[in-house]
Length: 212
Image 1 (cartoon, one colour):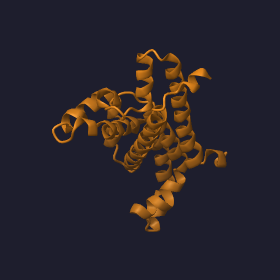
Image 2: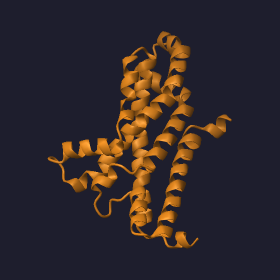
Image 3: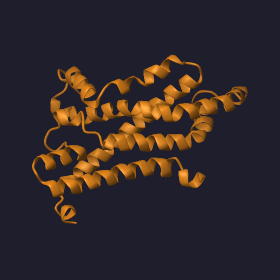
Image 4: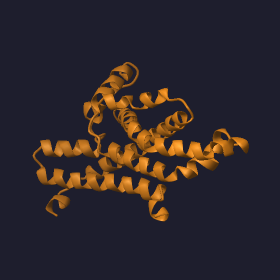
């Protein structure tokens, strides 16, 4: 209780930044994973290995590479949050892909011929057939990707300016300043944020409670 009462005011803006980055990264990751999973399910097997390549790198490595590539074009202060978002999306993509691939294969096996016979293709097939049938794994993947992104302390630590800290970075700074109770309280907020984002994806979007 003392730690929660001792929370510095910058915790809530940092939590809002973490939530915004996590949601945006999850949408990007799951969108890319869905496209790759559907392509693999329809026969493009070479993309399966490509979807897993981000597992070979860390957020620090990817963040440093993007930072060095973009530094001549953009000021470092303007890179922190966009680079963090992109890196988190890339790192979450393999997890979302593995969640979606078995379901995408099942949907294609069960409904592809019927959809083709009805002339459903492209966006119409995606909206009317694929997305409704994949709602549950999509929600689960969104929740997992958002929770992973909310807790990431990688690229943001490289070049975050004052006022750009995410919640994991702020927890590290508080701990480094020996404000242990405040750091523990901020970490509790971070855990609650990650679980809340996961529940939003898995239950609200994926409809797990409704299907149970």
